[in-house]
Length: 309
Image 1 (spheres, rainbow, N blue to C red):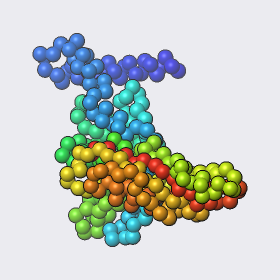
Image 2: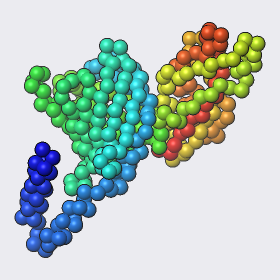
Image 3: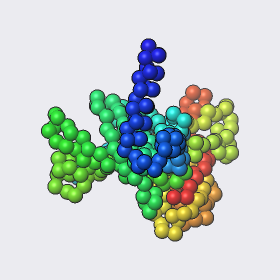
Image 4: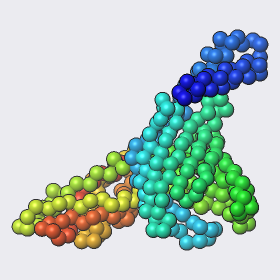
């Protein structure tokens, strides 16, 4: 079986080379064609760009069922890694969304022959795949992937964009935008989803040094455990577009794991970052700290890093 597979691969490769040779100007020799083909088969600078999306991620997905519908928010986790010698980004994700909870995989690459990024995704909300391709725009620091899907059940052709925006080294955004009339309902476009990913390693809460003083006579304390981290938004200030900064936050986690109070422990020194970190802090969710088998309030301190956009 292995011999048959290798033979088939070799045959396809040789036929491909013959086709290229027939369609290429006579000025290129067969050796030059082979060298060109092998060059394009290697990862390039665009693949290094995709490496920024590797690692463990927390995300918040905002979804709208129809134009004007109430927004639904779902937390989730994802992991990305480069595969096949750095040629493709392979990602997996899971989300907790009640009846809509699910998981999926995606593969993003860059076809050096056509100089376009490629995307294909699968999830538990269907038995089909979604695919798209497109280019990178340096002015918006984003990749826009165009796609179409002929749906025989709905009897429509879905037209959509997947937009990947590099927010910082520790954050990126994935948007789903539809353009077909069945989805837009007469509008020019309809954004169905926006998913903001934040690198999981950035968030590392630890029990504040003052916390043991609150319960020093009641035995050892088990610190709170992060359940959901709300990704902080990069400040929308023109002058901060290329600023990297960090904010230390102190948060008081109550008996139910909610953040009851949040203050800046150490300021970033840059406009907008302290406010963004505090706003996000109140939306985090923890398992409360435990002492003698009972939940207790506890202060934690952690660092939020904003990379340059």
